[in-house]
Length: 419
Image 1 (cartoon, one colour):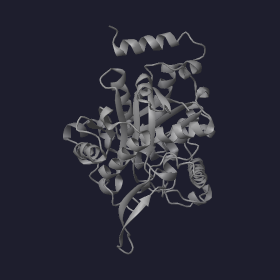
Image 2: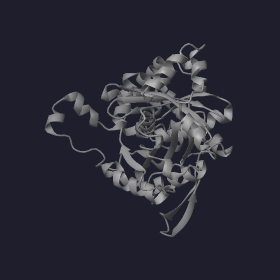
Image 3: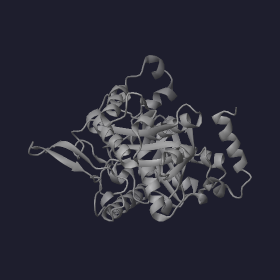
Image 4: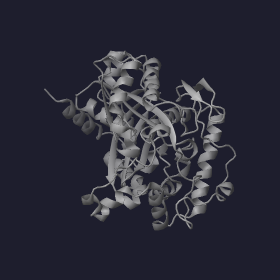
């Protein structure tokens, strides 16, 4: 009997006889790994926003409940859940298993966590897709969560041993992100005025999208406890809106902000991603399984790629990983309708876009992490929800998600929308 992996390879090989690479991606096959539901919480400002008093596991419980309700999936058919997380001790493995049980998944649903830093949420989705491809499971959820309000701090990076500190390339892995971004911006000649213009555009796109209600379809509202930081009054609030979006932002206003990491630097709080809290989840299975279960298909996962770069130039990760996706699929940048590239810093996102020759009109059309935040473990899964929702709204088909990763890596994944 042909194995699941061999069958999938056979299907992919047969597709190669089609017309263009883009056409082949749009073909539908029983073994396709499809997405039947995506959602996310709102993203809120770390330490000040709506989720500042909410633990990561509670955010995750909310999106788990949401994915069950929105998709109508029987929780008992979900065999495994992978959760991306960066900052919680032990990557939250114990709490997140508990969150799945509270949300309504049975004891038969397994849970694991994964930490590939800023790509953890995407890695979780890819891990589930890979398990389905290999026949390990039939249905799974890739998710991501981060409470930077509760877990971010000076102890986020453990002390290096003498052995690791003795090798410069290894030692470079613990250089703070802001310092790294300054190094990259200077090394690659990314001017501050260009960074500020890129950042201002992100704010403006996010403001316009929020006012038009374009985030509503992807955000699952959560009711949480909240203590007013000024009065100390405690209450229950419903969080249904990204609270980091700053209205009326301009490049001129950003140009007045002091550099954060060097007197003559270009990186500051206005052109870097916001410290945030949030969670997201993606429900995955084979097309044949979705049809059997009566699940509505909203997209499919095609492939992913990871790449390593020098630790001090970690921001160029998308530049290294995106071409690997193109090589795997045979498509080019022109075949992609939307790029969701994480805006860890304007400097790195802008440089990667320019170096790859990407059309900036296709990049983060509703804004990005500069405008509404980057909860580290959540972002990779959040991007899938944002991407597939926007592709459907605009009539696009092919989308790519990517991000740079701390210590010098990049990751990218290709998705196709169905509607």
